[in-house]
Amino acid sequence: MENYMDGFVLPVPRIHLEEYVGVAQKVAAIWKEYGASSYFEFVGDDLQLEGTRSFAELVDLKPDEVVIFGWVVFPSKEVRDQANREVPSDLRMAELVAPLTDPKRLIFDAGRMVYGGFKTSLNFLEDGDLSTIEKIT
Image (cartoon, rainbow, N blue to C red; front, side, top):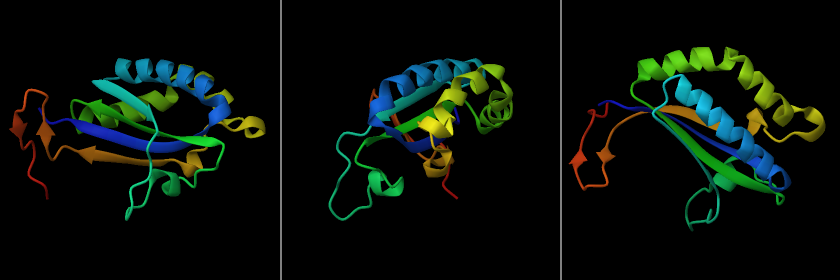
């Protein structure tokens, strides 16, 4: 199967992390309704590796913020493209995201988020089956 993944990295004020996670749980359920196979978000914990650029640098992390690293897996790029067209117009999304984007207490700053869509190049399953999914071009 040829999966497709949207990945993202964003900063969230530490004081609002619990509220953000609560919204993210509801957002994840909506993405699944529109065809996502799985939805993951993780909070940065160990973000420094000597000789590399960190996620913290990438999003210009402030001392009172944490890094969220997430991805949404879809069964195909076509399903992902359709979801990306439909989810933004789902009224529940506007209701959920509005409190996070209020300029008076900004929790989600899209201008500092890093995002991209990725096609599968390798899939190493838990059972140890290593299979090349798509030739990298």
